[in-house]
Amino acid sequence: MKRLALTLLATVALPGIAHAQSATDTATGDVGVSGTVARLCMLGTPTPAPVDLGQMANTSGTRVGKIATITPRTVTLAGSFCNFAGSAITVTATALVSDDASPAEPGFAKAVNYTAEVTNWAPGSAAVTTNATAGGASPTNSATGPTQPAPKVADLNVTLSNFTAPSDNLLTAGTYSGLVVVKLGPVATGGD
Image (cartoon, rainbow, N blue to C red; front, side):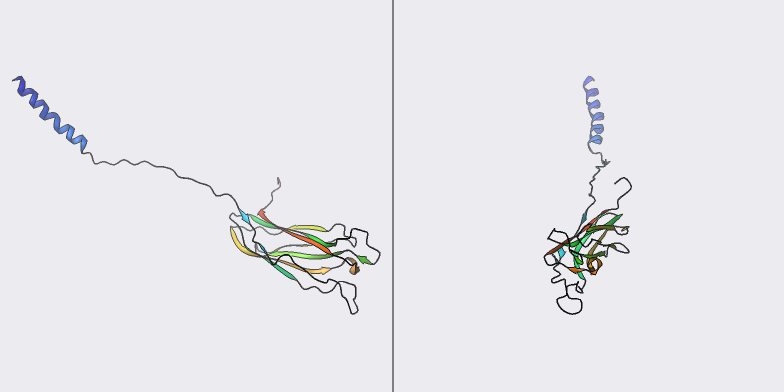
């Protein structure tokens, strides 16, 4: 009789074990995945660059020796972008100044002023005009354009125009050089 009881207990226990092994319920777990994208602005390669204005003074006619009419030049910065909202263009222009650092003689100028304007970013443009003296002092000016309210990719156009000599003086002979710096980035705030 004792034997029969043991066999019965074994039979009763087996269905419980079999039930635990055939469970079909599923379990789920969440694995979070994250990453970041840095704020980026890039300017395309200036094309054409550098800009050579050639002979800037008239060599004949009633304005001989004075600044010639120089046609506007446009440089493209293709594929420029910012991947965030709230960016702007700052353009800094330095007048073309003679490489000869000696003082300008009366009636002569050693500087050529111009306007640099960057378009195709935000509504409006970033434009600045240089205001160097005849001797080449104070050659650099800067301006910031309107804010671009969204991420953007565009071909920026930098147009150089309105070339003038201070007081329409005669230009001294020599090599002249200037510089335009285009900066694309977040709009500066009061703390920057």
